[in-house]
Amino acid sequence: MGYQVGRGEQIVETDARGRASLGRPGQLPDWRRATAPAVVVTELERQFLANAALQAQIEYAGQHPEQRVDRPRRP
Image (cartoon, rainbow, N blue to C red; front, side, top):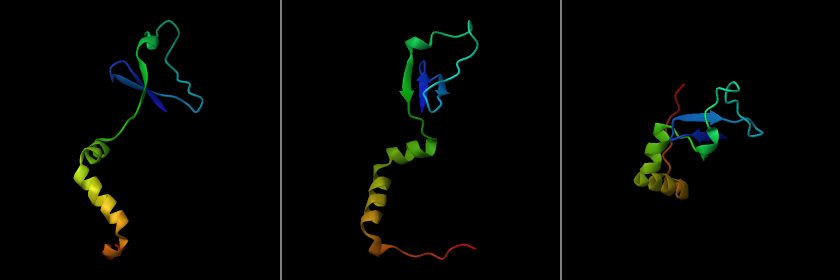
């Protein structure tokens, strides 16, 4: 899980218990004012999520396996 810090300026990843190392004491910015859970996606994932036509094609293909076209596998 990660937390978005500030206005998208930095992503801090937390461990399994939700802890993060934020630096040395006395040098920490005010983290309390702007932390929020973040979801990080790649540019390719963002393009896929924005393409409703492609999502519909994939959904259709999953619902109609009888139309599947087998292709030879590469060695």
